[in-house]
Length: 198
Ligand code: ITT
Image 1 (cartoon, protein in one colour):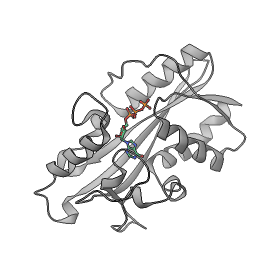
Image 2 (cartoon, protein in one colour):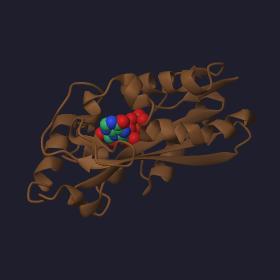
Image 3 (tube, helix red, strand yellow):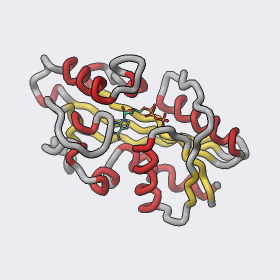
Image 4 (cartoon, protein in one colour):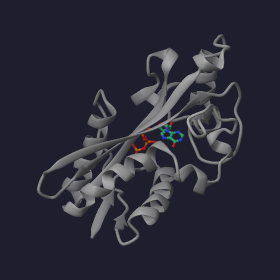
């Protein structure tokens, strides 16, 4: 069966290609270059649905989209849905993660630097049926940028290892390591049972 992946972020395309291959190698994932809808929802789920609906309407196929971001406990869950634009109007990943480190510069104790990556995937079927699933990757905000892999906030996020604080930033993990445990991979695992409806 075929499904459209509604994203304009090439890093997400690459990660989903590996994640889908690991869990549903038979699934044909088609890219999406259609118009980008205005993401004016107030939750990850609303924004994921806005993107998936636009792609499903434009293609007539089943479509899924990820809306994701970094949530820092001491900031009340921010940047959250504002992750892509945290430092301004341009999607500037370097400025975004430096601002976040600055905002936490007075927070010294590691247990007060807890943060999560969150992903909500929305699936919209040609019938109009809609579903959302979530994945969370727990960890802490680093005190400095580390590593060259991944994208976005990966250099400033230190994921837990076996439920305990880790030492490596997400950007220091290989793509295989990240895709085995990330918020996006966990959300996709929750999507798998729904894919039988396509
Ligand atoms: P699409 O809407 O086209 O899918 P986008 O990058 O604008 O692409 P979002 O609106 O979901 O996607 O914004 C997600 C932002 O959250 C992203 O730009 C990063 O800053 C951050 N983010 C999400 N997942 C991440 C990950 O796995 N690693 C690092 N940063 C991530």
